[in-house]
Length: 302
Image 1 (tube, rainbow, N blue to C red):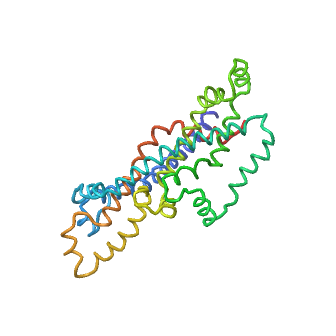
Image 2: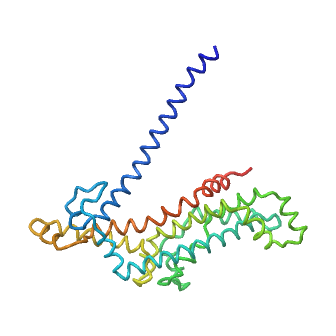
Image 3: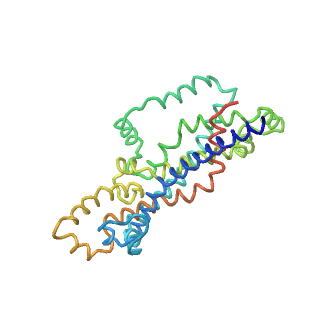
């Protein structure tokens, strides 16, 4: 009897596993195909790419697209701006958010509940774009590099996740540290932060991706071209090169002009997209272990 039950159960389990693998493979293909297509167009000659028919592999290999990107000074400067805001903004945001989250875990903080509610309330409503711009202008942040850093120092969602994670640190450890003479600052730096590496890595990844991919701030709050990040320059390129591509495809002049070009708007766009997404793809594997543990632990409270 046990053998028959086991034999009837194994096919169902096997079928479930096969369906899972099939769904995962299909999901991976939906992500992988656009990436391969972008890579193929980025490494293909611009004139040849404009004729179409390129999907997963370059037809005419060329590095001219990347050469054109890096020969434009504003593009190189855009990547430096993106690198600066990502590194400095992520480090500052994670540190300041961790400080606020640790303060909210203190049992001696007066009105801790109302303060946490007022902070959480800001997630539900926004003042709007115009009031936000006026605040940035009054703080003299518009058209400066600090407009990328200061407004993003605190994230309420990240603060709540960190607070939940900090609350899971045993109170006995903190009491023992106080008996050993550590101050609240010492407990934070020598006890809480070392035990919170998973959630810190997760929040750093969230902040880093947000800073690197943010084009909105540079497009609306910055006028100087040398202060615009790579994502904003990419967004501007997507708009301007669309008109160029349409003009090149007009009958009677398309191939005559394309034969003289090694890089077109479409190929430059794909090269720029690839350069923008590659850093995130390289960083994620190094924080994946901490990312999964940090999100799951910070989202649940024992």
